[in-house]
Amino acid sequence: MATYELIMPKMGESIMEATILNWAKNIGDHIDVDETILEIATDKVDSEIPSPVEGTLSKILFNVNDVVPIGTVIALIETGGQSGESASEDNNIPSAQPEPEVPYIPTPIVNQPSASTSTVKSDRFYSPLVKNIASKEGVTVEELDSIAGSGQDGRVTKNDLLNYLNTRTAKQTSSQPQQASQPVTPTAQTQNIQNQTSKPNAVSLEGDVEIIEMDRMRKLIADHMVMSKHTSPHVTSFVEVDVTNIVKWRDRVKKEFQQKYGQNITFTPIFIEAVVKAIHDYPMINCSVDGSTIIRKKNINIGMATALPSGNLIVPVIKDADNMNLIGLTKSVNDLATRARNNQLKPEDIQGGTFTLTNVGSFGNIMGTPIINQPQVAIMAVGAIKKKPAVLETPDGDVIAIRHMMFLSLSYDHRVVDGSLGGSFLRRTADYLESFDTNQTI
Image (cartoon, rainbow, N blue to C red):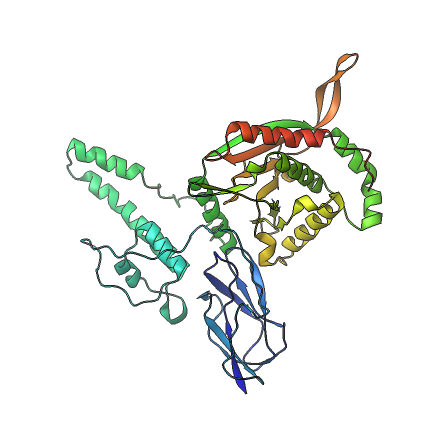
């Protein structure tokens, strides 16, 4: 018998660790090739990990909820092959190459000597994510060493560190009134006020309240949204669009479309088709920023923000959307939306997006100011379609008619997208929607 070492797979360039959600097999269970052995979660998506070999699970090295660095051996499988095998990039473990969307990019902690910082380098293991959070929050190595860890072998997890930061902030807040009561000079008092206003106010827990702990996905969304606002100066432009022809065309063909293709045609693929055409006209919208470098993407991969039953949000991506017709876009939209709501997306399904579309109209909102999905430079929101009186120009003069109207809004990164580009792209998308060919066949 040979022992096969199953390692935590590399789920993408920017993914440095993953959380074990569930072991699908127990010690002693037989495992077939490609049979799911465990479920893991990254800051991108939850995934099932299949076994690359056939054998018997002989040892589990990490428990549920443990956060494990990629490349770490997590289990041993007894096989009939040669000894010394281990999982690698050549095995049939799902692997993807995501864009750098994580809110924290791992960096080492530099132990700088000070009055409150130990100059002794710690031998304790800390994950890259924990190190980076500590570095950003000014947590010294000495402080890290003092934190009791809840992970494997007492390791400090992300939640341990965040709880420590919350406790530290609360202590600092509670000590401020005592400091303010002491005699201070006018200059010191001014400085004290500045220090207090630069820190977030403590949340009052008085009265009838309910404390709800964020789930893992909500924490990741929160981190990502805050990071995006810190990264990009957001500007939002708006246009109103007459989509009467699109509404009438869809009402006319949706039954036939369902019978012919087995798909329900929604407005989303029509919106995506117009966005793709406008990107071809204004390719600098399809970019990302790396320092002082602009990276223009040749592939047009459209992310579609999808609300989950839990209330959280995920953004599956339609790859190479410019190579699809309306039928192909409809099938992709329906497939991704269904798998997203059933928690069946794969890591590659939510990676590689170059532009994002979000439909705030599905919640009855007429417009919105969406936050950019980093590292992209723009995101478009489509509002609810409403019947409104509108002025139409005719050969016989202007008339007022009831039309189906909708607002489009575009939030863009003002570091690289100026008002001229952002506004022109938005207007061009609206033009494509208003000139929709109602005579096209399906």
